[in-house]
Length: 252
Length: 228
Image (tube, rainbow over all chains, first blue to last red):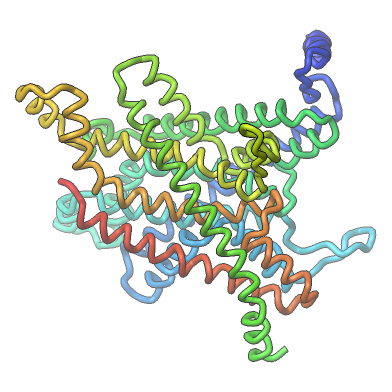
């Protein structure tokens, strides 16, 4: 089976479409590693960005003090500057003042590597967009729910945790899906700080095998599939968390 | 290094970086013009009742909207010719121009969605009223619906421009000498680790003070043109 696939693509390379990743074990290994790093970046940054977004939106809707100003400043700063400059800032500027460890053979090794900086920077970037998304979701919850809960004796904090936040989350899904698709696309920027993600390994492969066009088409298809998967997953979560009378026609 | 030395070094390199930033602005202005022109056709194409026009427009919109900017940029950098011959005239395509074309595709796809969204935001009753008054579909679209759409499209269009500008430093990866590339060159020329933080902070500030007012204005206009 595997042999047949390899033979097919080796024959295909004779006709001008040279997809080394399907018959060359070395290129295949590199490609899978790249795909793995891309998936890792999406999963980790997606998780942390949602966490940051939820915490930021909670601070903005519960507090009016300096904490809210800090969050507003963070959102404005990260939304209005390029992701790649932020990543360079973290990787080169902040990275230069971070402590350096020595690994087992005595070579200098930074405490936080390219992958970790990429995750930090992608999480902060996507997190800033998620703060806005969740805040809009909170704004979409009608005041009457809050008032009803207060009348039932809930404290403002309890109202937020048990009534406003669960409803706001459900109103946020469409916009959140959009942000996560943008995050999926943005993981390619980690290329700039040397994370061996999909685009990076593809660049290595087409430099060695001179099959730029084929590899470009392959990664384009893969990213379209990945963004499709992200939307599919969000829709599944949304469907699983659906409340009768809310969302899909019931939302304001 | 004292604080004043740091500041004076940043100021000293600023003209060099600002010339790079000029290229960022030039690329973003050209790409938004090309992208908007293409996007109008794609967006109206998406609304077409002809399947032969509608389906390809929707496909192209989704394709360019969901592909990473960097991948589209690589396409244009690696697959476009370095120069084109038109009737004996040779036009050289420098890498910044090819990058600009690479940025135009996602801009066109995003603007296509803005056009579609704006047209769909006009209440359906207006189409029916126009039909009752004897307007053709084309006349309704161009004389009744689209004039109302223009003000609604301006805020998202400005957001798109801000997004585009913050994407232009990606072209540094393919060797365009814009602000980020020049900052990196400046940092390497100084060979001083203490200057890394202030130089990159200055670059972040440069982008922030250009983009932030655009997004603020867009938000203010959104409130003004907001439809209920």
